[in-house]
Image 1 (cartoon, one colour):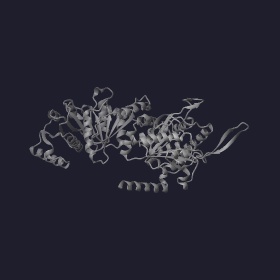
Image 2 (cartoon, helix red, strand yellow):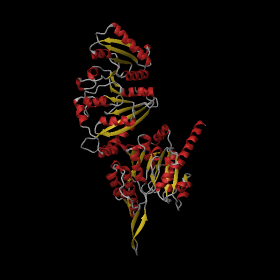
Image 3 (cartoon, helix red, strand yellow):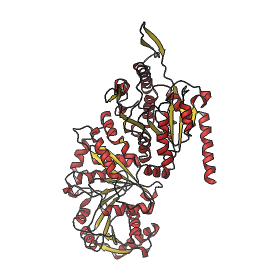
Image 4 (cartoon, helix red, strand yellow):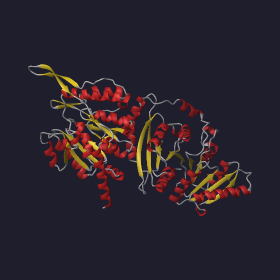
Length: 633
């Protein structure tokens, strides 16, 4: 039963336009008893004829809607998280969320057939037939308070779940509890006394003594009529589903349907996942749906990912809430600023981010520049703001130092201390705190997401004006075409090469980093291969203005990225596509008096996962020991 889990979670899908007061009361009482967490699920249905990716804006609006809800008074400091999933059918979204979140209990609000947006009977049947966790379905009643609870017990399939639930609710509302044992009319007095003794013994083992409840015995061959008669004196009725039923075309069975249609009390229907069930019967509607199921194509998977895992920086602009989430999860956040000759922009970036996200709001625990040998005033300016500056050739010097951003990022994992690491490029001219809080927000708010990429409009400056076209040339002409061809799972990334991203250390330390231009592409592919698509998110950072690269540099970047893709194709398919990959590129050089080819070595090599480096393991064992001593002190 659900109370046996040490990591207790309830999933509450919002399948109508609102959640009833009764549903809120029942979920709150269970959470208060267990001190668990609640995941409120928003679902976006997309018709078959449309791409799942079209649900992206609806998903964003739904997240904002859920964020502003105040249904729960949270008097018991319950952790409440929101989740939005996009799917063809509501049940598929619910089922996926139950499994993603490892939920112990699924609470389904009752849907009246006149709501018009879906068939109640099909959804309820799917939930009852397919749920992989304990289940409560709540049909709201007309009574305002829960003062009297009736538990009619006919058999025993779901009795543990029923009693656990009713104990939590009666304790929360100090409600009077009546347990009614219903047996057939031909039962003898001796058999009745034996049934009562067995039930009392069971309830004592479950923590209910005789003084905690009223016992009512009933002998009847009309179970529904018996329950309805007694229900008129109660505010809440809790019943278990039958093992199977062919009546009324529903798994709920005739008794439950009759009770629901003939009482003003709230009805709570319980089904335990480990109860013995007979699945030989499936309603015709459910059979039709099930027969139409097919494995989703890669395109469908990507569309769904795009709709659910694409965020906007504005969703995470409440910095105080992000800090609360960080503290609640016991996390620290580091910002690494890779730099090479960025004296024009480094000061403004540090002043903006440090002033807002470190001094004013302590979202960041650490800010550091990772310098790759600047010859200008980059280091001097950074130090003037009182932040750490690491020179990449002085970090793990025994591992060598290669010219390239990727090497600096890899080494920064050793230098920085945070549980979450964010990196932003240091040539940004329109710096804003969103470049950081937009990246770490999804990781703090949605624990399933471990790595977040930024994307934005990238206007190009021509003369004194910026125009919207022309930015991200390597992305559109090299990176995205290659991903669509060979790693289509990543084809939903708007800007896979963006220099703004953040991830949990537990992921970043387990993947290799390419040393040069291929670091962004390599990280995406390696994280996909080791952890799957769903841990990756992307966030709209609105607009980024920066120094534009020369065509020659863009050509070299493309050459390196192609190398990374080919190398990872060989790893994925365990084949050798090229006996020896050419890692030199002939660049076409135009000069006033010359026109020639210049040979340039552009070799992408990869640093191993830093978790495999002994020095890294030693360093973080020392940090753990230091933190433990601080806690004790």
